[in-house]
Length: 509
Image 1 (tube, rainbow, N blue to C red):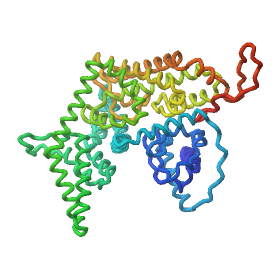
Image 2 (image 1 turned 135 degrees about the vertical axis):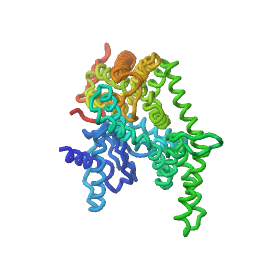
Image 3 (image 1 turned 90 degrees about the vertical axis):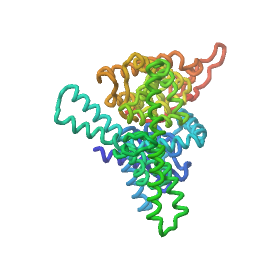
Image 4 (image 1 turned 90 degrees about the horizontal axis):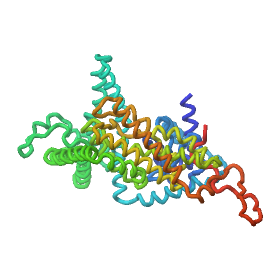
């Protein structure tokens, strides 16, 4: 049942993005199908957003179609197969159905277009490259994190003692070698040979590095962690590129990999590991100090500003920090706070739903997007509801701030809560929670933050998310023409069209 459905989704998407000839690259992350396109004008946005499986679209360096966690991993292979089949058969394009008007979605698309232009700065492009290194690691982090949580639960209950050591090995094996995977992805992202990046990064986790005498000090295996691996692999790429330019072609296969590993490896052992180790320690110490001394304020600011950071593309700078904290402490204390931004979105959407009882278009979008919102997939609510409306986006951030403040307060009081992986949020984060208390206490802290975010986002949006003029313009039926009430002494006017027709995004089931 699942495979035909996924293939049907892929088949519906392909012609709406211009066909196989318009697709230059195909990839996916946790929730989005990411496409490189030759001609952006061939994409039929409104029809694409109207597909029941599509939760929204995001434009960045690639054209990103939000399908949700799980679905995207199943639809992508089907899409790739269809692209290959269409290119092989060179089919005649079929006529496209007539697109439907959608002013709300158009406003969201315009905002995203402007934001894309703003995000194309060297610094933000660099952050995007860093994110590209770590995003492919997220599925393994999630899987190992959930297994680690299950193992901890079994140990606490005293169940299956013969199995828990095996589960511990499965859960921690990836983390023990994460530096190698970071090195592989770094070299690939920066234009080098991935296996050489992995070879250099492997030095960091090699147990024998403890025997090296570095200026009278010994190193610890793993010192520098993912930051050291990233730096070592970047250095390896530059050494490799230099060798490609100057080493004769006849000697390249022998000299280039040898010099790449030797030079970058020596710099890693005699410098990078120590420097990266100090930075990693400072990150962990600062995160602990921040939440233990100013948890309320820190949580309020982080929870409230995360959505704007996402809009500016600056949230990608947090990915290496999360990875460092997970590698160093076993969990990142920042993610549960940042996840409160999604709770604020859900609360805001519920308020919009109640404040606009006649706007069936927006209410239809909210009904379809609210369930993914609870599970931490916020794009449909952001791009289909709150961001185009403006003020509800701000009040959603207020909800996230209050939720983050509650989690920060409880952290400050000694109930530390973190996540063993990055990527999920909302209710989907519960299986990945960890901390310095029992799993029940950690889950209670996170749940308290979610409830606070829902309530604060709802109240802020209900009472401050709309001006009177916005309510007048928006609270009209989008299925039938609306007739405004004439002012006293004014002749009655004929029917006028609704200000906002059917909202974009997924259809209701």
